[in-house]
Length: 183
Image 1 (cartoon, rainbow, N blue to C red):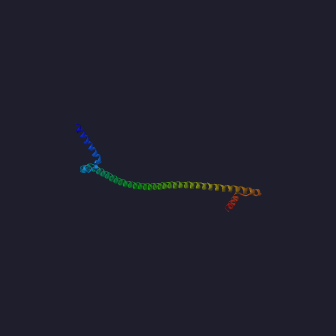
Image 2 (image 1 turned 90 degrees about the horizontal axis):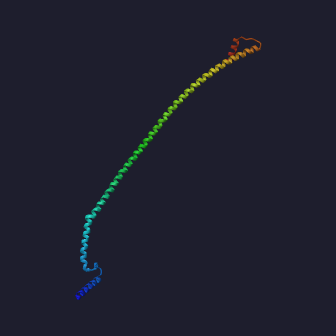
Image 3 (image 1 turned 90 degrees about the vertical axis):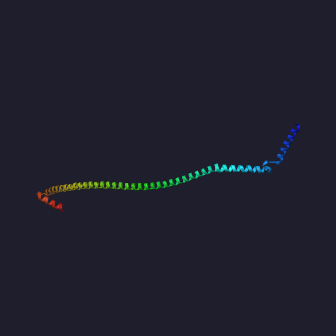
């Protein structure tokens, strides 16, 4: 038995020594066919996993993203058109409001001018009436002044004739004063 254990130990030491001399097992030409087989099996499994599971998911995500982007672009175009229409409507409403404001201002100016003309006409009529009353009053005062001047002139003429020592009748003094006032 001792020989059997000694032989097993020797055989294990020889295998370890051979493995150490061979180097890395990937570079051992004796294992190349086995490594190539498993490499091909692994690549085929990875190919089927990618082609049946991962790539369809990736392509569906890309398609969904593309659809979302296209929808967003079309929605943006629609919003852009709506914004342009809203801007045109705003400009039209602004122009209409300006025109209406000018019309209202024109109507207000016309109404103010009509009120002003009416007030001016009323003031002119009042001024004309007061001027007529003033002229009438002035004419009355002038007539009254002329009568007063005649009376004063008659009295003065009578006093002068009396101061000169003569007498004159009222009719001759009246005729002389009236002739002198007429020019």
